[in-house]
Length: 503
Ligand SMILES: [Zn+2]
Image (cartoon, rainbow, N blue to C red; front, side, top):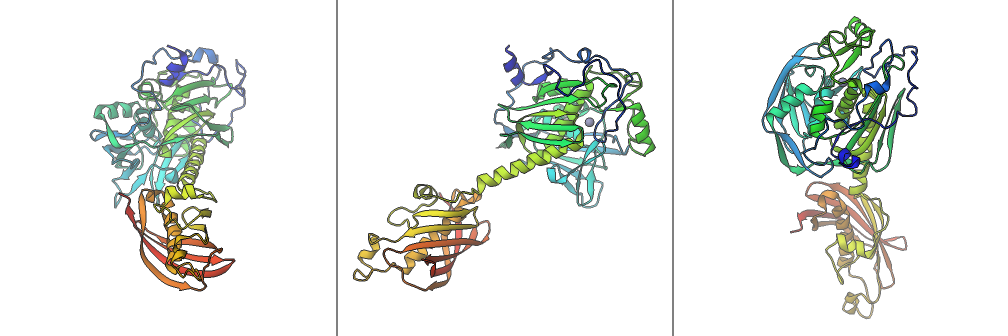
C-alpha cells in the first residue's frame, strides 16, 4: 500500500526527521526546568531517540473503517454506560454515567451531586487549564480532568453525549483513555440524523506559550497530529509522532498511553495536596533511572502517545470536527487550550462572514437571487451598502420609462407614494432575508406605520433608500426605512414583516 494511502487511513507514523529545535543526540543533561503545563518526566540518562520510536508506519496500523475526512453523520452511543473510580488530582470517588445525547448538542457534563444538577457543556467558553489537566466550569460549578474522557469520545468519533458525574472529577481509570474506549465500544455507536460540523483550517493558526508552540495547518483531509514531546532535554528522550485520527488506530495506538509524572514532581504535587488520586498504577511515575516505578511501559514512546491523546481531547473542545494538520512542540494543556480558543475565534469569524456578508454592493442580478420580485415590480436597481442584516442602502433610478408614469398623471408624472413604499419594503425584505436563518423564507409586509411623504418624486430623480433593522425576531422583523433624493428626505416609514416559508 502506498504510504500516502496508508496515512489517510489513519494511524501512527514517526516524523521522518526530528524538528529543527530538537536537541542533538545523545543529549547532554541540562539544568532541570520547571514546566507548568507539561506532564513531563525526567530521567537520569537520555536513551537514543532512535531506540525509542516506532517504525515509519507502525506495523500494527491496519485498514480503517472509513477514510477520516468523509462528511459523516453525527454519532452517539446506543445505550448508557458507566464507570466509577477516584479522580487523578482530587482523589475523590465518582461515577461517570455516559448517556446518548440529542443531535447537535455536543458533549455536556451534568454534576448530579450538586443542587439543580448543573449542566456544563464542553465548549471553549467553559474551559480552563488547571496545572497539568483540563477542567470545565460554568457559574462556579466545575468538572476536573476531562481530557482523557474527551479524547476517547473524539478518538471514537462520538459527537453528542451527556456525562452524568457524581463528583467533581472524572474517574482516572488507569491514566489512559483505554478504560473509556473499552466501555464506549461495549455500548455500541449509533449514527444520528444530523451532519457532523467540521471546521476546515484554511491558513496557519498558531500559538506560543513559553516553550510550547502549536500550529494548525491546512490539510487535505482529516485531522493529523504531529507532536514532539521534548519536555526534559537531557533527561528524557525526545519523542516525535505523527498520528492521523481514525477510530481503530486510536483504540490501538493512542488510547492505552498513560499519563506520566516524574517521581520528584509526584512528591512535590503530593506535598502541595495535589495528585491525591495518583498511584503508580494510574500514572507512570518515572524514577531516576528513567523507568516507571512499579509499572512497565506499554509503548517505548508512551509519553508522546499520551501527549497526542491529551491534544486530541483538548482539541475536541472546539465542538466541531477539525480538518487540519496540528503540529505541537512541547505542548501542554495551557498551550492546547490557547489553540482551541484561537480556532474557535476563527470558526466564529468564518460563520459571521458566511451568514452576514460584508459586501458593499449587490447588483441587480444578485438582488434577483434574494428578492422574488421581477420587472416591472422590482423597484431596487442596486444595493450600495450592506452591513450584515442590520442596515442596507439601495438605489432606484426613477426614469421616464417607468410603466406607471403612463397612467399616473401623464402630463405631470409623479412616482406613486405606494410604489416608493414598495421599493422601501423590497430593500427591507432583502435585508431580513440576508439573515442565514431566513434564506429560504419570504418577508411578507405585515404593517406600515408612521408613513410620511414629504416631497414628490419625479422622472430623473435618484431615490436613495436606507433600511435599518429595528427589531428582528424569529418570525417577524421591524425595519425603519427612509428615502432621499439629493439628500432631501422624501419618504419615511416603519415597516413590519412576517417571515414565512417560501414553499
Ligand atoms: Zn493526560
